[in-house]
Amino acid sequence: MRLTSIVKAGLALLLGITAGSSTGFAAATAASAATSATAGASVAAVMAEPFFQLPFPCGQTWTGDSNASSAHQSWEIDFNRGSTPDADLGDPVVAAASGTVVISAHQGSANGFGNLIKIDHGGGWYTYYAHLRIRSVSAGATVSQGQKIGEVGNTSKPGNNISPHLHYEVRTDATTYPANIQKAKFNGVTFGYPVQTVTSKNCGGSTNPYTPEQVCGSGYSVIDSAALGSAGTVYLLYNTSNGYNCVTTLKKTSLGTATATSAYLEVQGKSRITDSGNFGYYAGPVRASAAGTCVKWGGSAGGNSYNSPFEHCG
Image 1 (cartoon, rainbow, N blue to C red):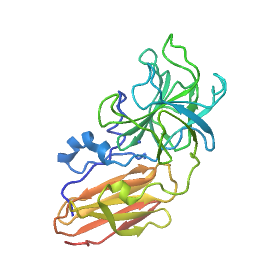
Image 2: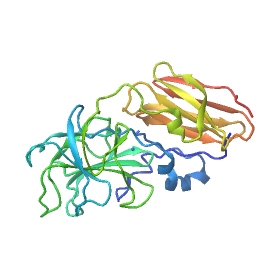
Image 3: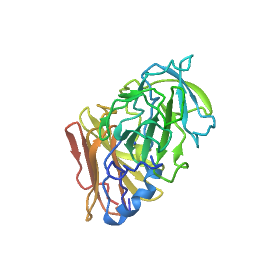
Image 4: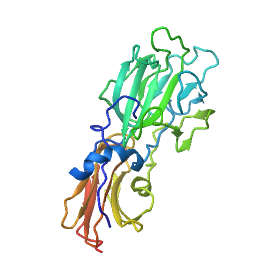
């Protein structure tokens, strides 16, 4: 079984705007005082990437272009779909995944973003939506995947005249700008850089896009599970290569909407590790090494909970 615990990055840890970076996945719980000090540097490497969708309503087709320009540093994408320069002006922009709005403001002379919305999806993942004509959500708001957050526009810094389009970025907090800009994925597929036409699948799907193995990471396999009514399932996993257990709770209802969800793991004789908060898809992962002892594990979703006895010993 395990040795240390991992924190789930949360909104309290990830509100920096610099070139940093998603339920979202949300609140962080420190596994211990010793690990919490170092978790921020590695969290993006261990948390599953949100299941991003195109930042436009279901069924719409948009062409993204990442060709280099003075405004592009890495894997940013500019989106248009109209045949004339102003055809996209005022088209709705929606959240690529659920999360919490950490910036909703005009950037003034600070950069060329103009009206910018930045969403924290938890786990060290962020999305940026720039040049908006209007912003429909305020900082601090919780948004669902597919919820309207603004409209396509051409706002920028003073003197910078641009045609209407959406400038979209995915960032993590793993490193500094621009290395923290990540290749965008939509519906699980990496965008076809430098130019691709994509149809939005941002349609409020009814299936959780994550698996327990994706949440816990490479090398983990499910060894036990418990249903939480129709609201979700809590899973216990084990990694034979490093001896760690992992627990995660995957939701089955209210997907993409932040609702109360939890997961915990308790090694016999040690303190319980819990990840609890309002999450869009899952709680966890929580990991620990039992070193030949027994574990309790469990979680909750939709008002249902499961609590195991000490078991899976050895």
